[in-house]
Length: 250
Image (spheres, rainbow, N blue to C red):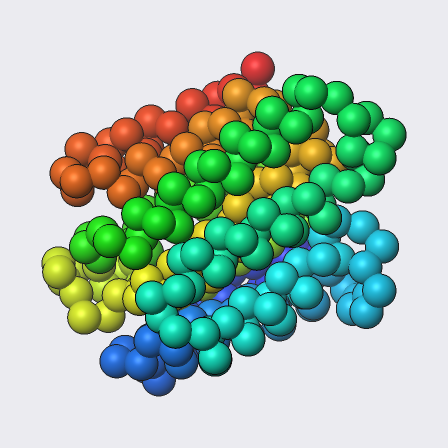
């Protein structure tokens, strides 16, 4: 079992990361599509089944992946942030509907509005921000999510989040040894990865009961990475990610 988990969460995503880097170093749509396809393969293997009619929140992830793939293949690049924001709003409601159907409280709606607002800001900022070190920033947030999810009792979400870290692993390595780097994540790829990341955060909050404080910090961590000063924003992101983990330990 440990070998299987390591293979699903680390080894296979790292192999995919190397393949994606090799075949898509100058192709935006190809890179984003390969990232989605690769993570979808990991998702189906880790989860163990494809439910064409989703029965729970995690089952809807494959639908999100499919719609994002359509956007990548057909939508104009300049419209992707807006489309991804709107799509995430739809899936945010779908993810939370079982909760809202029996617990239609103002606090739940407040959380959902907060999540959608931050996600929309992050997606908009990606459209106008220089590349910086996107793989390292993303991997930092996803690693924190993996640890928080496991501490909160969900190995499955922890595995899926860890696979996102490994899927950007080779890109992070190139960003460490070569800055700025041509072997980086394009903005369309960042949008796809963050859509998956935020989905796992929200599902973890709603159904695994990740602490509210950790959830807020996990949602804000990617936003902190989009400030103007690269060195400053990474320190802030590390602080947010670390505090999210500490909050889950309390």
